[in-house]
Image (cartoon, rainbow, N blue to C red):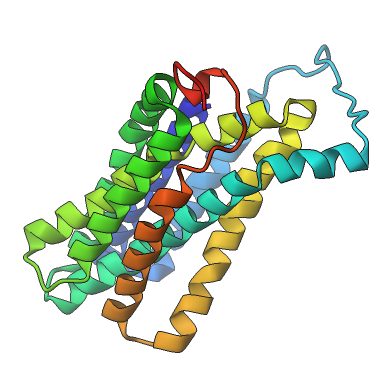
Length: 258
């Protein structure tokens, strides 16, 4: 799971640097070149798609009532991932804007995004080790504590160096649990691992992105106020992340379990 998430994160990390470099040297009318490259890549992947004729079909015989019972077991994880997504995405939104307001070039903002998400590739792997060694709840605690410090730094009128440090803290600590929470949800809901994954990945991520607007609406363009609220939310999530979801001696619950 960590390799799967890290690969997607790596692609996300390369995007900002490419975009900022492209628009700095070419007009938007030249985007057709990028479209051709993307189309050629898609066709190549389509042609080289593995043969699925012998793939076994998985039939889900889980009852609707059992699915609901399983979702109750992962509701805390869903909430944790939703809030984590809120903190990361809003920080990613305002990081380059803060850099621009301080007179830094456009490419610096793109580099900021790439460095943050690129660090997430490594910390995703580190988070897997931490969860196996100390437990997923401890990893979530470290994640939110680190994000809280990073957001607080971003809210201050700091130098470009500290701006990078704060941004790296948010993304590096945020990505610690990017894959482990999904794997933990699958352990808690083994009867329907696909539903567990979609709940704490796609659905939780979508909820986190949607929550941004509830935070933006009351504060408008006051970025500092929004970052302070994110800091308070991250601090509040530290004790919540320690909630004992379910007693288990599974690998992601650490050596001694919950």
